[in-house]
Image 1: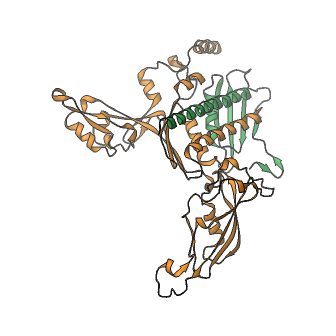
Image 2 (image 1 turned 90 degrees about the vertical axis):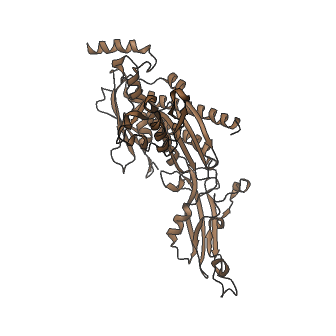
Image 3 (image 1 turned 45 degrees about the vertical axis):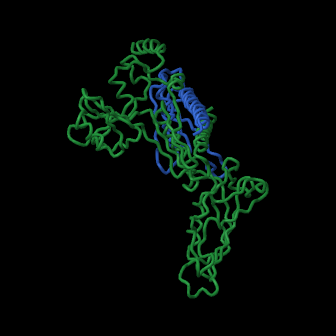
Length: 112
Length: 360
């Protein structure tokens, strides 16, 4: 549950080392774990515009993931690149979902 | 200078869609885990976009190639278990889906128990704990999550009554069997009486998945009277909410034999030593004799029996295919296994959307 005494905690908190350098940032994802952390890191690392991507779980008692991103050029922001990573994972999963439904249909049609 | 060089290289690479034509040995190590007697080699898949830059190959994410390489096939499907295979994904995605199946696909389970009377020897809290673990056949997709501050409603709560009193059967003093001496000495899950509320009256009758789960034992004079309330929850909060007894995957095993080394006696030895009957004898006629072949790599449990003996490790190449996942989903009976995976995909996409919205 994310409610903290009436105040709703944000899911994503962006921590910029230097506001003038938007290409490097650490994203604090609240109420998340390896389920999202690892796959987002993987999608980031597969992005040509990303120089560095890594995630860590600061303490197992706290449900939080810190995701660090550094991009290849100063004009590409970390936020942009994370957005692309989320899109990539979403596209992959959507396609898996479509293929899964197709294979289910095939299974049912083949008379099991 | 370095940046200009990199820019040039990247432009050159844009035309290459994905990793193609890697030298055979590199491709082997990229796609297969080598299993040795005491270790597994090349277990991690190079994920970085520039992993094969030195070989002129682009390892970055390419949706078209992903779609082209993805294959899903269902191996078996029963009301209890589904076995299916996904080829063309990597560990982070497979694991994410497995984790979501286990801990984030919601289910309904008993959460609150109000005892009016409990004179049994099972403590209140122990009884309540046991009641929570009983799988309840209610479709979680048509229920809402309960508002923790609000009143329970017919859209988010299920009510059950449990009222069992144990009595002595008259004139049974000479009997020895429990069922001959006592009435209601055992409380089973079938004794949970669903009390439909509001719009639930029109819906499908709700009851525990199994009738015969033993909840408590009583003796004459003991009584349990309680009202039970079930809510929607996820495995992450309490394992009772998990829709699966378990869900797991394994990688497809691959065994390569160098045929010249497996003729005659060796062939028969190999076939006999495998506990999973992975190998078979192939008779090539009088001239070439017999040799061993791989009949069924899928049933291999990687027990390593075939490479354990001295010298055999070089002759039998035991591997795992890193991007070929064989999933097993064992349902507890609340949701059909095929629906569990569908819901898991849905929940996963929703999680991504929540992060995306907050990011914006």
